[in-house]
Image 1 (cartoon, rainbow, N blue to C red):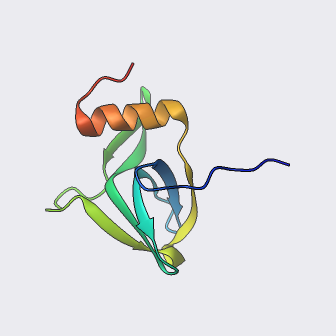
Image 2: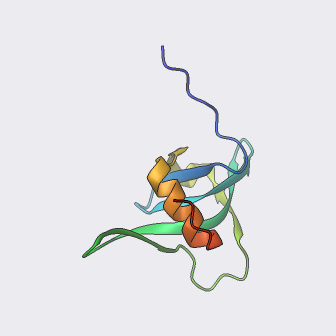
Image 3: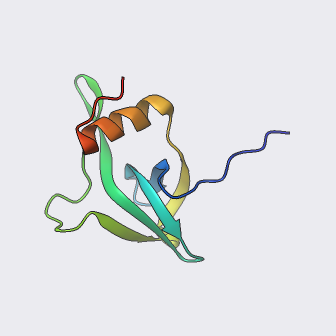
Length: 95
């Protein structure tokens, strides 16, 4: 039996939304109906493979609350994706 580690504050998560968007963000918290995330980036496919760009370009805040009803799935991000996300959002090289 595989026991998964629960997602906790500060973890980097990937979310697939019902509208088809896939985003990666720092998980903050959740309630029965909402998920709070920080610095979400949208995944995009380009000529050089997958890339990340701001999910909301003109926002003047970094933390967003999503309705769980709009989220198809939320999982911990793969290690290489989480590293790329951290480097992109903090400017600190982790490799």
